[in-house]
Image (cartoon, rainbow, N blue to C red; front, side, top):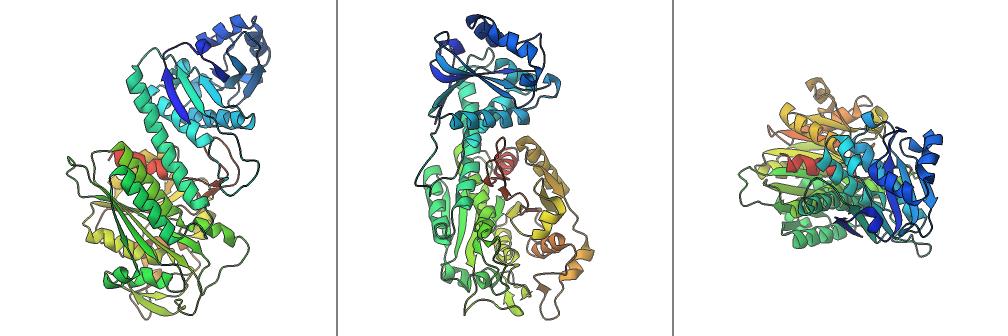
Amino acid sequence: MELHYKKNNLLQEQADVYVVTVFKDKINYQKILKEIDKKLNKKIISFLSSNQTAQGLGEITSFPVGTELKAKHLFILGLGDKKSFTVDKLRSQIANVCRKANALKLESIAFSLEETFDATGKKNDAIQAFSEGLFLGQYSFNKHKTENKKVDIKSISLHKLQKGNAQSIEKILERGRIFADATNLRKDLANEPANFMTPTKMSEVALKIAEENNLDCQIINKSAAEELGMGSYLSVAAGSNQEPKFIILKYTHKNATNKPIALVGKGITFDTGGISLKPSAGMEEMKGDMSGAATVLGVMQAIGAIKPKVNVIGIAPCTENMPGGKATKPGDVVYAMNGKSIEVLNTDAEGRLVLADALAFAVQEKCSAIIDIATLTGAMMISLGSVRTGVFANNDKLYEKLEKASKKANEPIWRLPLDEAYGKMIISNVADIQNIGGREAGSITAAKFLEHFVKKTPWIHMDIAGVMSVKQSKGELSKGMSGNPVRTLINLVCDY
């Protein structure tokens, strides 16, 4: 889809639909709306004045128009109370407009949003959110549908902003597209069935990202992982016929002075639970158990495009977790690359096993901070549902950076404790630690397990199990895998 800023008036543009906005204020209608109303014999404002519900947040009123306008349709987008309007509301509502245009099979949209951007009080952020909403709102995963594929919008234009030069506006719009493309990549990877999205395929995607964005890429195969002593990671791969792939992507800025920030993503491309087999009902959703790794690939793609002045390393340990003759058994003891011994009491607690070696690898790389992202525990879904990502941190300043970034992206998080008392719940009788505690505090004991592998490095663990997927399309979220928290982490890196 092409997106362009144009200096001409909206009414000069040929398009399938014009989109203008209205706040819940019967008096101060926007200038462009008054111009359109004049051309349509004052029917629009008369209608809005007598139908206040049309001005409510999220209401899209569609008007068929004749030869008076250079468009086939007119959408009036209600934005509710102007005083409470935000950048996040704008992003969501623009996405809904695109979804409606798709439903009507419209191929071109022209927007006039000068006063809408101003109402947020953060004009540049609003322009970026507008762009994000456009690309996020159009997303759908229909790759494997052979019939009734949707008609995509081909062109969108934004018209005549009084403040800001065209070049800077185009740059902000492009930044929004980069954020959305990275998010949509994460969705694509996680929505893909596991027979298509194998560890090898993940590594191929990583290599392509590296080639297109001038990143360094290294793929550690099984034999190399064995040489590095990644026994914890390889114990999960033992039952699968798919070759495990430990992916490393590096972005280096010539003027950056920091030791790299590490982004570490759990990459279980399908999780059966291994010998501790999951129930069959709902197991198909475990194709998304590599959402952490998909997040890392999406963020690294965006970083390569934006080129912030900071060094970053993306780490994605990928494998399947399958039962089989060579699979790890409950009660087995394995060794991570930092020498720590682990008693595997439950092979379905495999995410922490692959992350153990990935975190130890990040420490070995002398990273200045580590953020891991994982669909780690069902307990997190019980704690926070599908609203917030559960976050654990050993460093307050790093957490504050993440919290600021999450608010900017409208991807809410919530910090949970890391008290040492929880760590006692994973002390093993036969090894240094065991990979599960009891029934209580499952998400916290999982985080305490991971803490053993970061030493004193500032570290954050993001448990995204609850926000992995979305049950229905709404705003910038599309049914299926969510894309959360890609935009949060791009913000974190760019503002670091």
